[in-house]
Image (cartoon, rainbow, N blue to C red):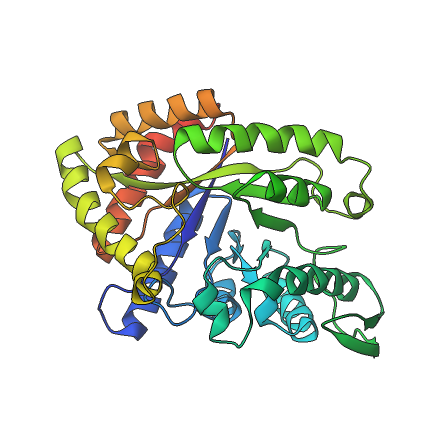
Length: 343
């Protein structure tokens, strides 16, 4: 079992500069605790995400850490010109000494990509062509591409990533189509939702990985054995009651940020993957809060039942303060991680 951190960098009210400083300190503690990677979200025009430019935040993080891997979960590819992203990926991977994890996707919020003038109906085609161009540019000496969305004429690729042929790809999948797409490209895989929802997706991914071993993109993928992960909100405190006292309002605050743009436009976020009610989220396993022994028992049960090999913890979220997040992280690292590592 390996462990990662997922962070929306969602808004909670303090001055923005101090918020960034606190998150850098949090990530340094994540590194010291031995987590594999620190994954950050990309969002736009919403309190859900205060790192709308993941590369800018991660460039700062690269110089404040030495071992921790990190990356976007995910780059919203339709929002980037591929040439710009290729060059920034190369810079960031080199600045970090080859520690970038490269998540890719097209985004689930029609309003966020709409702010960039992109229609949801077109985002899938843009995403797939953008990924094609991204990988061409990271692996070739010159980039020549003429497609429906991007036209690049014989451009010299003067930069290259530290990790060859390119940094490992990650994909956040919500259905069987996403499972097979990620497997064909040799991507690490992560998903969200209650235990009953994620269990078939995790097992499908393991099966799809075997079935797509001869896919052309797999031949160049740097991922030999994939991380197959699930995301969980995790709060650890001295007692179950104290953890619940912290987690309940923090989760409500976080979900209000998740839902804001949707509700502003008369809708609701995707259900199943994103669960509005805290008690329901606890019941189905999406939130794990409690004393160290409680959290260990719940996550051990999930790991044995679901079969994931990568646990992605959302420890800093919602209205939790910096001190509360750091205490929860410290308890998880000292009391929970040692018991789960051998699973």
